Length: 409
Image (tube, rainbow, N blue to C red; front, side, top):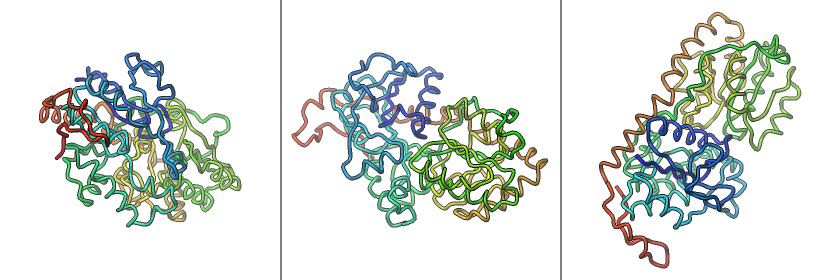
């Protein structure tokens, strides 16, 4: 099967959706499918029939689209929005057996409409949580505003018959907000290289209790709660925090952490470096207020770390907690300090539960997850097929609306 991934950002390895898309592409190829990507590329003149030197996946390159007044919000989330180009998208879609659209903005919307006119089946994935937008505006806790963003996204997703949801939580949110597509709940999956292993702590970590948290350094991820919890911990003198990520709040968190006995280590880590850090860590914390799934948490438990997770209403990550000892009240550093102190003081139980959590991580290995998404793609192909006239898009009106039949449900 020829699968075209349509995603604004496929190049930045610090963006969680990009990382998931790259892993998805690689897993599909291991299963014998051909995969190409329509996305923003630094050099939009790159030949679309040549593999990209970074990962040998063929790109259909597009230029960047600015959003006056919102460029700061877009950049804060590590996004780049791609500008649709009908000629490029037609070429990509005519190659494909199916298009899988991974972001709900201008590129994804235009690709869906062109796919419908060409008779190419199209599915979608829900990766952009409304809170990602509203927290960047400082309004993440205003539920009516989040509801409004769900409403804005809904007409786009309702044009697809099938939508991939990385967690039951987000599927329930979509259904509660009136989304009508068939929703397929499948984890984004863990890279198979994240397996249980322990490494001795390097010199600057020796003798310390290392707590790691991965994720973008942005408001909704709440790394500030972890830093304050460590300050309140009975064992603050022993604890070393590692914040693996980058984002707009990096300098703020560096300032917050200066007064800790051991200031946090902050910065983006490659996948290999992250694996090594997790293998040298003692505990994983995920403090986010909003999260569709949090593959970073799954990666940590897959290596054998016990997690402590915020029980946030707008986060799916709490589903990975096997008992109450791995949960704390969202936004409450005192409750997080309580949970941290428990695990610091119970080494044997932490080791035992680490093995149990590793089994949970193994259940979410990407090679177990991708066949289920593959089933969704094959179902969409079987339901539609190439019924439309491939020349339909040559007859568009001046506003860009096609006269071909679109795939709507």
